[in-house]
Every structure is written in C-alpha cells, then in structure tokens.
Amino acid sequence: MSNVTRASFIIGTIFCLTVLGCSPSSKETVLSEQEVAKAFFDAIYNKKDLKKALLLGSTKLKTEVKKYKTAKHLARKLLNMSFDSVKLETSSTDVQILDEFSTQVTLTVLFTGLRDGKTFKDYKKVRVVKENDIWLVDKI
Image (cartoon, rainbow, N blue to C red; front, side, top):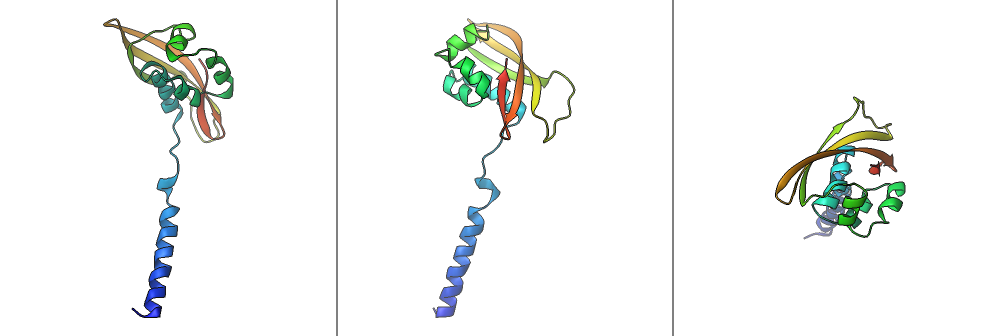
C-alpha cells in the first residue's frame, strides 16, 4: 500500500467517524406533553417508582411529591386513587393549538385500572409545563 493510499484511507476513516458521531440518532428523544403525563402516572401506578415520577415533575411539583416516601403512599394520599395496575389515556381538556411557543397545556388523564380484581375508571386534570424545552408535570 503506497503512502498516498494509506493517507487517503486514514483521512476517509476520520471523516466517516466524524460524520457518524454527529448523527441525529445520538440526540436524546424529547417526549411530548401527553407522553410525559402518561409516563408520570405509569411510574407511580405500574412501575411503582417514585424516583422516575420525580424526573418527570416540575420543580414546584417535586417539592410536593418528595413529602411522600413511596409511590403507593403518593397514589393513595395525594392522588386519592389506588390501583394494582392501570391503563392510561390522555386528551386535551380544551381545543388548543400546540406549537413551539406553548409553555403550558392542561390535559385530562383517563385511568382504567384494576383493584382487588375489579375494574375502576377515574380521571385527573394535569397541567404540563415546558421548562428548558422539556415538558414536565406541574400540577395535578
């Protein structure tokens, strides 16, 4: 292999690595406001993980949620709903046009869950706010 071929190979390899390293697939995926609301309640009711729920809450909500030591306690006392498992659906409470300038949205989260072998349905209104270009649950 000649020096010119070797140099071309090295330059080509460096170029490919640079281009592949900067591809959009390396970026984090940003959740929509509806996905954040679902993930928040899924962390509480299905995963029973208060730490995951805290990651999806705004600064204001985190201070309130931290008072409850477990997801079960939070669900029973703050949300006033207990489920063994739950299916979640969301819908906007008002017809709103969402764009990159929206900073808050009010959603209705519909719960269909099991408790002691019986099916229960309930709903909660949730305010989701945008902090640093990330949607977070702010108020329940």
